[in-house]
Length: 403
Image (cartoon, rainbow, N blue to C red; front, side, top):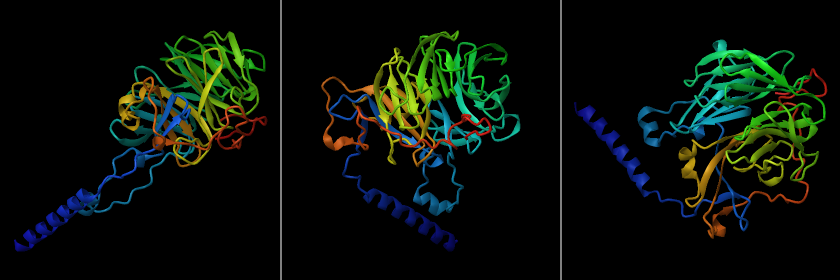
């Protein structure tokens, strides 16, 4: 009995020492520097918030006292290996891991990390892009399966829809009851399928360089006003179409200045109609208006949080704001969030907020962090065009495909 009491006293004493040491620690005296685009003295519209590459950034860390009492448990390093597509719903980020061959789930709401699509009929072979409908169904484009693989609101496998051959599906967009699947094989077409049954209703587009034609297109998006946008990668341009495939405009040319494109990839549309285009060559995201005019850019090459490393695409979400508000400046009003996937580097999923400060507000110099400056009116690349492994596109040699 005395032995048990002595052991209890030792455990309690050690516990109290941990508490005492924790209480003695003082908060850092320096304030955290914040990254904005464009940087002050211009009026900032985008703030970099945080990043994640795996479980370590999502799940709560176990404290020293927990390790002492429970014992240290070695854990396998649970990380995203090579992200490409990304979608977000209410604080949960879904990432297509083209090397891990799964759909990684980063849950910032409940602080959990998990993966799906690793077995059974829903096993993913090369997930490239993902879209989530208002009911929570996930539609994953799998280039090797040549299918759209469907997971339900509970993340369980539901169905798989065949994309008509020949095909190399690379992206997907949802509008009402229709799925718009982008194919960058020799057909270079958009396949329209029923969201529930997978039945093909029509196709549009073809290979070529004229308006309404594509050359190895990479990404597709539908705007709130019902227009179709295509990242026409090897024509170095962005196209705006009607939902029936009629050309509205085609903007862009090869180059590394704003308004030009080195390797346009993911394209998504904000709730305000702003068009976001990820450029893998210059490692920036360009922002355009609905007429194709350049507004600004953010990101840029580097190895710091907020910089990008061979970015692939992005996701835009408003419902997740409460789960990321704590990372924002207290006076910065967030309109929506942007989640940009980088294929290389330490910081694979970077989270940004689009918004504004109140009129007349100004940041102190000590609050501002800066990336390596990129001149707005000079060439900004190429930074990294080695996409032999990164880009899920067929090259000029139809037998060579990236991953």
